[in-house]
Length: 62
Length: 399
Ligand SMILES: Cc1cc2nc3c(=O)[nH]c(=O)nc-3n(C[C@H](O)[C@H](O)[C@H](O)COP(=O)(O)OP(=O)(O)OC[C@H]3O[C@@H](n4cnc5c(N)ncnc54)[C@H](O)[C@@H]3O)c2cc1C
Ligand code: SF4
Image 1: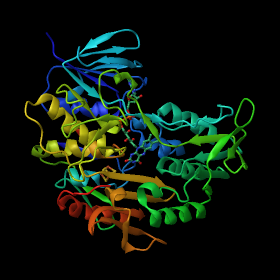
Image 2: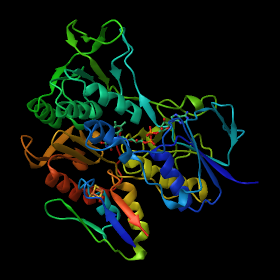
Image 3: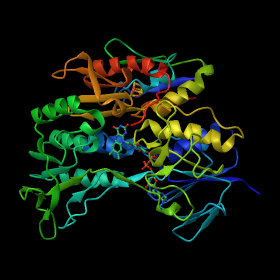
């Protein structure tokens, strides 16, 4: 699956990290890093991450 | 016959409920009824980015999951009554909808000040239309703004107004410190100082007695008789639950809809409440039912309530960890847990209140909440305490 985070929207809330730690992480400065092509087995997690992003910055494409 | 679940209220909690009903296996019909003309949209930016003009109104729309592409939306329609014994709701156009399951997701509306004086020029911020109107008023040259209520939304609006270049922004509140009700004195003082340094004025310890002006507001009369000149008044004095339509069904509607731990209302297996309007016991704390007006709650409650409605067995215990954020000026507040339950024992965990600070709230020596105030790094460090809060055993206490 393909994940896109709109980095213009993202404000590093990190809620996505709690929902899908295998896909999203915050670096030491507190900024978001993520895997853009996670395994399909992680779809539930990623959908949950998209739900809980306060800025609604996460898009799942296919 | 086609089975149907009706969701009353088509905002965040309503949408999440529909999505979670599908995730829980409901394949019958879903009808969402909402009195706003818009599809569900995200409210927090209404007092922040969108009010500031940094994000367009269109950017607020939620992106519904594909699983709800077949649900029926009845927008611009109000649910005016419910017959829970008959399993029907009535809409303002006279339509009756029968249901097999009912999700109550009608949320809150702003409480209004009941004082003498003109109405024009007085704003609240709950809906897109509210925010659009307020933005227009704030961007008129020379606007003088009085915000009534020094809670989160009031302080966010004050910060946004200053950021828009409004020269005169005053926040009025009968309490001596902003946001101290939920956050306690230590952060209340730190927040007051930060707001003042960035140009917000405060009239604290004062209530509002009325408004001056003929057709439109020209000033706010305080309880001590003084008058603050104002063309724009923002009332952010709390909210009222939208539950009138449920009256007459024997539910406890004292403050929102009282539910059990499965989020069922009135012990009915076919009626659940979600989002801001639900007053539910949290097994993580003392089991006292409370409403929680945080953005995370619609999603948490929807997940649990959907299982209650769709599955035969009761879902597991409901123990969401509340979290909350607020952006004001150039700083963020990030909260995890329930600081309000630990206001008596507040400790600085890291940093100091003059700069970036991480504060812990304790009850019986146990950490029940953390709040970070400052930049991104300290907000991220609050997140590191989240795991610790999650590990804590249930709290037994009386508040
Ligand atoms: C300006 C603002 C800023 C916020 N900022 C933050 C923040 O920074 N952080 C945070 O954690 N939380 C924040 N929140 C809180 C968060 O947005 C709410 O918790 C969330 O919106 C609750 O969603 P809900 O769907 O339960 O209720 P609502 O969003 O209130 O939705 C209820 C819907 O039901 C409709 N309705 C009501 N009665 C009827 C009826 N009889 N028939 C049909 N429809 C009806 C309403 O019009 C509304 O559309 C903020 C809220 C506001 C207003
Ligand atoms: S939750 Fe949203 S805003 Fe926060 S870090 Fe993840 S993508 Fe960014």
